[in-house]
Image 1 (tube, rainbow, N blue to C red):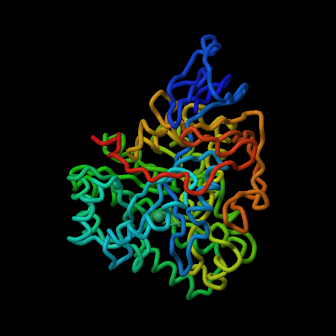
Image 2 (cartoon, rainbow, N blue to C red):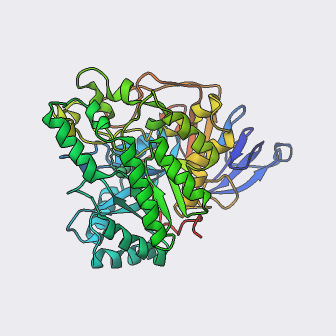
Amino acid sequence: MSLLVKGGTVVGPTGAQPADVLVEGEKIVALFDPAYSQTVQADEVIDAGGKYVIPGGIDAHTHMEMPFGGTSASDTFDTGTRAAAFGGTTTIVDFAIQKTGEVVQDGLDAWHTKADGNCHIDYAFHMILGGVDDESLKAMDSLVTEGITSFKLFMAYPGVFYSDDGQILRAMQRARENGAMIMMHAENGIAIDVLVQQALSRGETDPIYHGITRPEALEAEATSRAISLASVAKDCPLYIVHLSASKALEAVAAARNDGRNVFAETCPQYLYLTLEDQLGAPGFEGAKWVCSTPLRSKHESHARDLWKGLRSNDLAMVSTDHCPFCFKDQKELGRGDFSKIPNGIGGVEHRVDLVYQGVVDGQLSLERWVETIATTPARMFGLYPQKGIVAPGSDADLVIYDPNGTTRISAETHHMNMDYSAYEGVEIQGRVGTVISRGTVIVADGNYHGRKGHGRYLRRGLSSYLV
Ligand SMILES: NC(=O)NCCC(=O)O
Ligand SMILES: [Zn+2]
Ligand SMILES: [Zn+2]
């Protein structure tokens, strides 16, 4: 089966030019100057006139069905990957979890069981280490050979996923040897827990106190400490997840200026949503936006600095940290005590659009849009050039994006299993049109043509950015 995507502008990390894309089976086989493709025959032709043709989005930070905060993230691999497809994402990298006290391989097997046969798009795993000891360190080596080449550790959530500095250092030393990437949730969880208890004892129970008790200084401190530990571990590659604050970004930028192996992502919520307007919404409403790291103050320059960081590459890419909980029943668990509100925001369906709005707003170039949502995630996590680029030999994961369309985000129209939208009413001046996964059209004109089970597990290589 062959497919010709004709008349569009192909956008990649280094440029945008008119080109027709020929797909044979699951792969891109050629790009043609439109002047020369008149004679090309294909079983199916898709008109991309006036539209961008970009590589399928890669969301490198999702939590489908994650047990957390006394409940479980509300999207399954089925609902979450279908929603991702609607939004132009054709690959996710989800976090498999070794619960504290559990054997790493058992945690991984459980994640395979959840995902196997249920995904609409391709998927891979990072591994959360809930405990660093001799056994889990050994398991890191074997997971790397199985295609799981990145491990997340937590400086936050004492008693749940938390690792102390000694454990972190040991995992980093191991990663330096086996080539893996250490991903870090960088917040000083011990100090945060003190602030949380003090706030609750003063009767400060509303959702906004979730943000107030997780100040910028404690994200910046943990980020700097992680960078120092990675340096002691002979410059172990380090990737800071869900970076939200200017001072944390400064620490990453300084390390990068020193030539260090340090990378970071941010998420759409930190580019668009704020402590005051969302987390501080009246009554219990702000619970919808409880996530960690938290939303930051609009009276400071965080969002502006994050966009700048994306332009300068101090922030490598945008992931969603998709971890949805329904307002009714799930976020409700923390009514009267913000520390019991399940942490997380859903957004896997909207990342491609929300970052594109940055192009419309003059924050990013078209090329940088594609780089931050697809090409860099592929390179960062060992999926390139199979994924993340429109080029011969790569998987035919394509999004035909209409810069003249519009998208209005709403819980009434989204496909995620959430009873609200964190971005309710936001208008995007662009629209995902056709979405193709390994040569198969899975979304066209807002209609779904994909199927559960189409998505394949991807064994990843080492990061292309390792030095
Ligand atoms: N980020 C968040 O609030 N929930 C998901 C778990 C994590 O990434 O820390
Ligand atoms: Zn985290
Ligand atoms: Zn996360």
